[in-house]
Image (cartoon, rainbow, N blue to C red; front, side):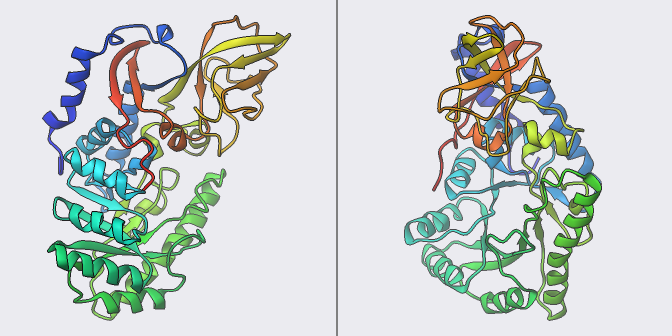
Length: 379
């Protein structure tokens, strides 16, 4: 597949087999908390999403921020992705350092230090970045011209998220006109994200609303093209809208991320994908009847989308995290001190960022250890 060889995708895996004594052990024997990934379930998710887009006009550009793990990114590439998306320049640097040669930074890169890193990275790979202001464009253009590199610019359109992006088609057209012919940059198309709608639980309502929102980006594309400026790409969408906005005429790239791991929130939205990610935890206290305390808290599990779940006991009621290092579980079965459990976090993306490795397993046995190379890369 484009951007990565099969040998490169497996080299880190082969190395871990020769170095890590945990390979071959039952996962319940591991220390806790440990971030786990069911490799077979994740592979099925990768195949399902890649298969959905195999014969469609839009292509898959998965979002690295979900897992920040190079091994998993390479597995996504081998499954059929055309490149990777990331949220931070530091993530893009990790991807390029590890052989992935087509990367979109779906965010604005600002500040002289970052811009210099950006244009140097663009000498080593095809780098795209979101912009929404002429000040950003001019800074990148000057630095890229000096470095003799080219950065591809996607103008971000605010289609309702209320975050970054220009609020009108006319403003996008004006910026597209201004950057034509500037040195060191090229107009690569549009970036649009319907993130304000991905958590609409009713799937039909999500489909209707997200297609209407992404339609604003398509209309912007049509306006620009009518002026004679080609728009080669609209990049956006998510794991929750892949089958609605991802099939919309005029959308070229789908930045789905969570499908690779899944979490408690996203499985409610797209139950066709399997939860592959969990945190192995242990019961460390039984302070009273029906109450248990687990050895992980907000420092080890992303909780932005609500309470977690216990895989073995899906009906157990879990209150929100009460402390940095603990989860208190009420209405529990008679769990024993030291009993291992699998916690399903509500948010996979922020969970993975808290760890330095993923322990891959199949049939309850550790099969590999994957570094999370971009963990903590915030700049």
